[in-house]
Length: 159
Image 1 (cartoon, helix red, strand yellow):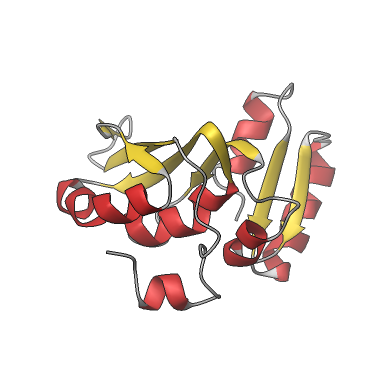
Image 2 (image 1 turned 135 degrees about the vertical axis):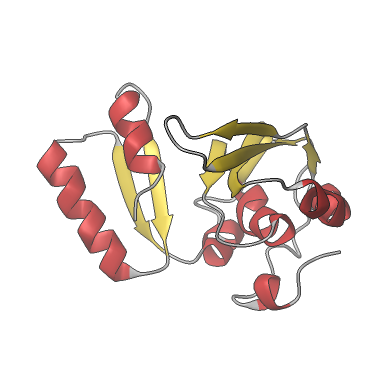
Protein backbone atom coordinates (compact mmCIF):
# COMPACT_ATOMS: atom_id res chain seq x y z
CA UNK A 1 0.00 0.00 0.00
CA UNK A 2 1.17 3.50 -0.80
CA UNK A 3 3.80 2.61 -3.37
CA UNK A 4 4.97 4.78 -5.04
CA UNK A 5 2.89 7.68 -3.68
CA UNK A 6 4.19 7.74 -0.10
CA UNK A 7 7.79 7.51 -1.30
CA UNK A 8 7.25 10.38 -3.73
CA UNK A 9 5.57 12.48 -1.04
CA UNK A 10 8.61 12.02 1.20
CA UNK A 11 11.03 12.89 -1.61
CA UNK A 12 9.02 15.91 -2.83
CA UNK A 13 7.42 17.61 0.18
CA UNK A 14 6.63 20.72 -1.90
CA UNK A 15 4.26 18.75 -4.18
CA UNK A 16 0.71 17.66 -3.24
CA UNK A 17 -0.14 13.97 -3.68
CA UNK A 18 -3.53 12.29 -3.83
CA UNK A 19 -3.49 8.54 -3.21
CA UNK A 20 -6.56 6.63 -4.36
CA UNK A 21 -7.26 3.09 -3.20
CA UNK A 22 -10.33 0.89 -3.40
CA UNK A 23 -9.74 -0.81 -0.06
CA UNK A 24 -10.53 1.20 3.04
CA UNK A 25 -8.23 -1.08 5.07
CA UNK A 26 -5.27 0.20 3.03
CA UNK A 27 -6.48 3.80 3.30
CA UNK A 28 -6.61 3.46 7.11
CA UNK A 29 -3.10 1.98 7.12
CA UNK A 30 -1.83 4.78 4.87
CA UNK A 31 -3.42 7.38 7.17
CA UNK A 32 -1.37 5.92 10.03
CA UNK A 33 1.78 6.14 7.88
CA UNK A 34 1.01 9.72 6.85
CA UNK A 35 0.36 10.70 10.48
CA UNK A 36 3.46 8.90 11.80
CA UNK A 37 5.68 10.57 9.20
CA UNK A 38 4.03 13.96 9.63
CA UNK A 39 3.31 14.25 5.90
CA UNK A 40 1.18 17.30 5.16
CA UNK A 41 1.23 16.92 1.37
CA UNK A 42 -0.85 13.73 1.09
CA UNK A 43 -4.60 13.37 0.59
CA UNK A 44 -6.08 9.89 0.81
CA UNK A 45 -9.18 8.93 -1.14
CA UNK A 46 -11.17 5.75 -0.66
CA UNK A 47 -12.54 5.01 -4.14
CA UNK A 48 -12.16 2.72 -7.10
CA UNK A 49 -10.21 4.32 -9.94
CA UNK A 50 -13.23 3.82 -12.21
CA UNK A 51 -15.39 5.87 -9.82
CA UNK A 52 -12.80 8.61 -9.38
CA UNK A 53 -12.31 8.83 -13.15
CA UNK A 54 -16.02 9.44 -13.73
CA UNK A 55 -16.54 11.96 -10.94
CA UNK A 56 -16.09 15.71 -11.36
CA UNK A 57 -13.67 16.00 -8.43
CA UNK A 58 -10.89 13.96 -10.02
CA UNK A 59 -11.65 13.52 -13.73
CA UNK A 60 -8.87 15.14 -15.80
CA UNK A 61 -7.62 16.79 -12.62
CA UNK A 62 -4.02 15.59 -12.21
CA UNK A 63 -0.77 16.57 -13.94
CA UNK A 64 0.71 13.15 -13.25
CA UNK A 65 -0.81 9.78 -12.36
CA UNK A 66 1.40 6.82 -11.45
CA UNK A 67 0.43 3.21 -10.97
CA UNK A 68 2.00 -0.08 -10.05
CA UNK A 69 1.60 -3.04 -12.40
CA UNK A 70 -1.79 -4.18 -11.14
CA UNK A 71 -3.15 -4.93 -14.64
CA UNK A 72 -2.23 -4.85 -18.32
CA UNK A 73 -1.51 -1.50 -19.96
CA UNK A 74 -4.91 -1.21 -21.67
CA UNK A 75 -6.71 -1.76 -18.36
CA UNK A 76 -4.37 0.51 -16.38
CA UNK A 77 -4.82 3.21 -19.01
CA UNK A 78 -8.59 3.01 -18.68
CA UNK A 79 -8.24 3.35 -14.91
CA UNK A 80 -5.69 6.17 -14.98
CA UNK A 81 -5.92 8.30 -18.15
CA UNK A 82 -9.37 9.68 -17.24
CA UNK A 83 -7.70 11.19 -14.15
CA UNK A 84 -4.95 12.96 -16.14
CA UNK A 85 -5.18 16.55 -17.45
CA UNK A 86 -4.50 17.23 -21.11
CA UNK A 87 -0.70 17.56 -21.50
CA UNK A 88 -0.25 15.57 -18.30
CA UNK A 89 1.25 12.11 -17.96
CA UNK A 90 0.39 8.63 -16.81
CA UNK A 91 3.40 6.52 -15.80
CA UNK A 92 2.95 2.80 -15.36
CA UNK A 93 5.51 0.88 -13.32
CA UNK A 94 5.78 -2.56 -14.94
CA UNK A 95 7.88 -5.71 -14.66
CA UNK A 96 10.41 -6.68 -17.29
CA UNK A 97 9.99 -6.55 -21.05
CA UNK A 98 6.63 -5.06 -22.01
CA UNK A 99 6.99 -4.79 -25.80
CA UNK A 100 4.15 -7.23 -26.57
CA UNK A 101 1.88 -5.58 -24.03
CA UNK A 102 2.61 -2.17 -25.55
CA UNK A 103 1.71 -3.42 -29.03
CA UNK A 104 -1.51 -4.98 -27.77
CA UNK A 105 -2.62 -1.79 -25.96
CA UNK A 106 -1.73 0.94 -28.45
CA UNK A 107 -5.26 1.28 -29.81
CA UNK A 108 -6.77 1.42 -26.31
CA UNK A 109 -4.36 4.14 -25.18
CA UNK A 110 -5.20 6.19 -28.28
CA UNK A 111 -8.99 5.79 -27.67
CA UNK A 112 -8.45 7.13 -24.15
CA UNK A 113 -6.60 10.24 -25.39
CA UNK A 114 -3.01 9.13 -24.82
CA UNK A 115 0.19 8.56 -26.75
CA UNK A 116 2.89 6.17 -25.53
CA UNK A 117 6.58 6.97 -25.48
CA UNK A 118 9.37 4.41 -25.56
CA UNK A 119 9.49 2.49 -22.29
CA UNK A 120 12.34 3.06 -19.87
CA UNK A 121 13.91 -0.27 -18.88
CA UNK A 122 16.11 -0.64 -15.81
CA UNK A 123 17.39 -3.11 -13.25
CA UNK A 124 16.83 -2.48 -9.56
CA UNK A 125 20.27 -1.71 -8.08
CA UNK A 126 22.11 -4.61 -6.46
CA UNK A 127 19.60 -7.14 -7.88
CA UNK A 128 18.85 -8.85 -11.16
CA UNK A 129 15.22 -7.70 -11.05
CA UNK A 130 14.15 -5.87 -14.21
CA UNK A 131 11.42 -3.24 -14.29
CA UNK A 132 10.16 -0.64 -16.71
CA UNK A 133 8.30 2.65 -16.81
CA UNK A 134 5.85 3.29 -19.59
CA UNK A 135 5.13 6.98 -19.99
CA UNK A 136 1.86 7.96 -21.65
CA UNK A 137 1.21 11.58 -22.60
CA UNK A 138 -2.44 12.70 -22.38
CA UNK A 139 -3.08 14.63 -25.60
CA UNK A 140 -6.89 14.67 -25.79
CA UNK A 141 -9.84 14.46 -23.43
CA UNK A 142 -10.85 10.93 -22.54
CA UNK A 143 -14.29 10.17 -24.04
CA UNK A 144 -17.07 10.32 -21.44
CA UNK A 145 -17.78 6.58 -21.93
CA UNK A 146 -14.52 5.81 -20.07
CA UNK A 147 -13.78 4.51 -17.59
CA UNK A 148 -16.46 1.89 -17.85
CA UNK A 149 -18.24 0.55 -14.75
CA UNK A 150 -16.21 -1.19 -12.04
CA UNK A 151 -14.79 -4.54 -13.06
CA UNK A 152 -15.37 -4.12 -16.81
CA UNK A 153 -11.90 -2.78 -17.73
CA UNK A 154 -10.16 -5.81 -16.23
CA UNK A 155 -12.65 -8.38 -17.58
CA UNK A 156 -12.91 -6.82 -21.06
CA UNK A 157 -9.78 -4.73 -21.76
CA UNK A 158 -10.08 -2.23 -24.59
CA UNK A 159 -8.57 -3.31 -27.88
